[in-house]
Image (cartoon, rainbow, N blue to C red):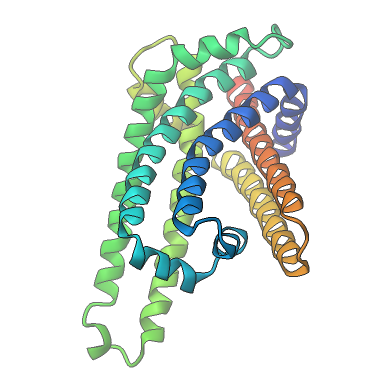
Length: 290
């Protein structure tokens, strides 16, 4: 019942935040445009806007793409450099916006229709949330390294020890499953730590970092159950989108329809993020042990 109440509250906050929802979508669309447009112009210049461009952009053609990379090795260097820069900028932008989102969700009952507190929260909590993200990045890297070491130990000897590659692949699947489960847990704890940071006036985030672990473990049934439910909704939505995307490609429906479908998917994912953070705010505000 506590999970359902928190989920309902999250959906309520998301539905009341149409302005915030729209703002996040526009920021996402602008960022995507800044990333994709230069690549499309480069492809158009190099391929001279021939039919090959349509084959490469409209539906991925591995043979064409491989030939293109062999003839234009500088594109791979450009793409790798851009990926690194874009990744850093995206993480920074995401952390910046998170402070504003949580500030607005926290003050929903007193300030529903104004976005002023959103921009204030973006700037106020940026460096604290960035430090928090750095700490959790170290946690994720440690967990990934641990499971990589476990996998390496479990397949030590390679094909000289195992009868086939299937046995090695089976161990890889087991390690990947448990790693994904634990990584998901730490992503959840990170969300609770974000709410604690925004709720606190301290500039140091160490107490909130450890406090989130304590809170989640103390209420593991509710916190992790809610997160798994939301993650399941995310996976279900993604499966439906990729299925619809495949149908559209096979039927030869105009690219505009594919673009619009993709934008609906992006809007839904933004909504799920708001629902998730809203649910966490509800749990942290009232406490699940009341």
